[in-house]
Length: 327
Ligand SMILES: NC(=O)c1ccc[n+]([C@@H]2O[C@H](COP(=O)([O-])OP(=O)(O)OC[C@H]3O[C@@H](n4cnc5c(N)ncnc54)[C@H](OP(=O)(O)O)[C@@H]3O)[C@@H](O)[C@H]2O)c1
Image 1: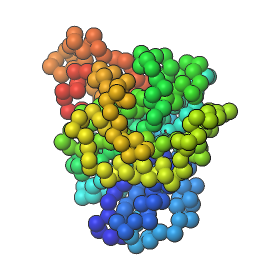
Image 2: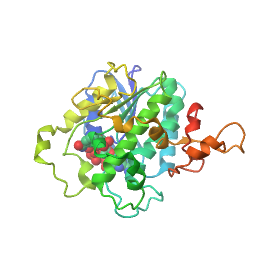
Image 3: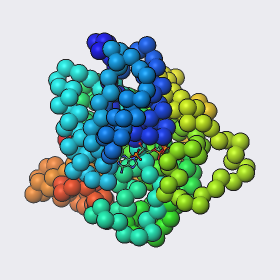
Image 4: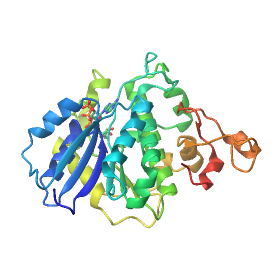
């Protein structure tokens, strides 16, 4: 493979818009090295083997990744880092995987949070933490695939109730809520990684012909939205625009690229701009250090902390930690 290859690590590239986006990159002259996380490794490998691409130019590796399992996320990150070694960079991290199921009944994945939240936000947020050092060393671009569905959440104080496991909320409520917390996480990472990585959120547009509707059986698109429907290749093209656009607005909060190519204004994403809300939904790794200097036992932390977001032991939200480099 050509040595000038750019490395793309991606979730959600086994099917749907993510698969199409990688397929479009495989048609480019620019060489790429893809490391893709998928729950069906053999099926994903078979799907890529059917694409006629130049194997001397590009490479595609598929590693197991089940995003409802945080331990599996850690294994995936370790495998990615082993594959890359010290020398190789991550040029792009594409966080595209999502599901749209509701939380009508308690799940079996062992979290107090519903599976859609764990898959769509928590696991992928955790993955950024696990790859952080490499991403920073690479000056990587991190692309959070978001959705205009975030506009469906009018009151963010409902997120905590909606996203609990077995909350009773259906996919029409849980999916927008999960995509909003994903966008809150994107803002949070943009703040953490300013000057180190580029963080972009992007919507592919309304694309009914993907697997996403599996979680919302019976969903029909209202006639007034039919004019906005786009094809899978068009949606993939929108995501890829987020790989290459450099015309960032001066306002650093305007990270959301629409499917029609505009950077959304503050009004459109106002529900995601509260920094306390971003902090609350963006857990960091923390340790209680016996009331010493660092964290979690200070009064100001106790006041804000511990929305236990279901991460492995030692991971907590804590506003004060934002000033510290997290590990
Ligand atoms: N379609 C739309 O209208 C639309 C609109 C706005 C935003 N989006 C966003 O676009 C992105 C792609 O969606 P899509 O429409 O292409 O949906 P899709 O066809 O259902 O693809 C979703 C991808 O996520 C993966 N995934 C789901 N659950 C997973 C899990 N537990 N562990 C690991 N991977 C998992 C799927 O893997 P499998 O192949 O194993 O299922 C698939 O690769 C999502 O972030 C979605 O929110 C879509």
